[in-house]
Amino acid sequence: MPEDLNWAIGGEAGDGIDSTGKIFAQALSRAGRHVFTSKDFASRIRGGYTAYKVRTAVDRVESVVDRLDVLIALTERTIDENMNELHEGSVIIYDGERTTMQNVEIPDEMIGLEVPLKRLAEEAGGAIMANVVALGAACEVTGFPIENLDESLEKRFGDKGEAIVENNKKAARAGQEFVQAEYDHDFGYSLETTDNDYVLLNGDEAIGMGAIAAGCRFYSGYPITPATDVMEYMTGRVDQFGGKVVQAEDELAAINMALGAARAGARAMTATSGPGIDLMTETFGLVATTETPLVICDVMRSGPSTGMPTKQEQGDLNMALYGGHGEIPRFVVTPTNISECFWKTVEAFNLAEKYQTPVFLVSDLALAVTEQTFAPETFDMDEVEIERGKVVDEDDIDGWQNEKDQFQPHFPSADGVSPRTFPGTSGGAHMTTGLEHDALGRRTEDTEVREEQVEKRERKVETAREQEDWDYREFGDPDADTLVVSWGSNEGAMREGLEMLADEGLDVRFISVPYIFPRPDLSEEIEAAEQTIVVECNATGQFADVIEHDVLERVDRVNKYDGVRFKADELAEEIKDAVAAETEVSA
Image (cartoon, rainbow, N blue to C red; front, side, top):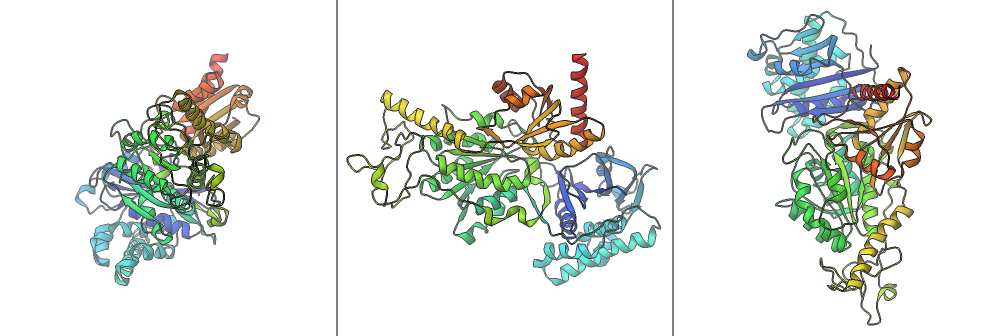
């Protein structure tokens, strides 16, 4: 029996693939097993291939792999799409009574289970439960106690009434009992359960949870894949803490609403993807020049233009670093795993207020839609610290007024960070314009004042560079000759890939970078390595370009831009090939 099980359900958009997969993932996590999910879905409401894959083990799993052990195929295309991951002994569950599935041919080395999903569902109370029948069959195949499925069914259908819940439990057991009765076969699986307690959430949910924990009380956004789940998570929840979620008419309105809320003193955020970040660009400079603390979340997807909205890519790095006209001081924070989506969101709010500047929180589709298990203490709310920066009140306002008792919101302080007041602060009334302004916020074209304000805003970045921790995360062998550098969601696949490479005798040092600007200086690390490989999901190597600019040395690149995230075994093979190619050149 393998240490982990890889399970999937596939069909067409609208077939309930996502909800079925999530029910099974929740059941596994509630049974004390680690879970890591991945999704493949089309950019449409109905039609088009879609799949939900679950990898589960007692030990932690952090990536998908090129192996599929159990497949629930609702369409013949599902089998074709996954054939390269199916192997000898893989189990394929399908409804042979469906017209479209009657001519399905299962390869001899695999096990095909014809289960009348629709008929058994109708007998249990309705054809709509066919997928639940399949889950029951999967429980029997994998040796997973079906009682663990009950709690997930209760959570999913509890608001629909007890009768619906009981019908679904009945449907699951119908699938289980059919396989028991019709297939006298040892499938070789016995999913162990534990008493461990896990939280199951995806990256978008972690960002929303982090925002609420950080004190965000205003969110404005426009629905767009794959950022929408941030807004959906916060809707209703932030209201419990006195906050508000507003669905704007478009992305430009969303960022301007968030800017207004932040000017009023609320911690505010907006999130978007793809074309949405383009539309927001006009406001980037206004946020920076007015020195307004704002968190702007970009959940990347395949571009350019409309691109492939439901596919993976890390193509927006240059936009985050350089987007907007003129020179805009900013911070760019890039979570490398789902738990970091929570903690880096908290950090983003603190950075925004401490330095009164826009903070780009850059995630991607792979993080956004992936659900993973974590121990509850991973998100310890007692560890959340809120830093509001250089806020002044009536007691110390006079230290920031001029000789006419006028508050100076853009005072050219030594660290570049000016005082900030909330509306209603006595003596703190002021104005700020998007035009260049003086210390009082009044428009000016005076050349000396212009230079003073530009240099002041840039000094904030240098102050932050000195005062904050912009370090990287490191894994593998610190003394290895091969150095791999990556950012964003590639971390999990690379961490598992390290173990595979080590098994083949190749030691690798891996650096995962969660900050792109300011960012850690990797000069010494790259100089110490014989070969440096930069891994990222884009075609041109945007982060590799940045590193080469920093260290003035060429690096090798492993790029993936087909819309699919890196898998652990795939990435290990790519690294091995890159090392072999370098060895040939050196020889």
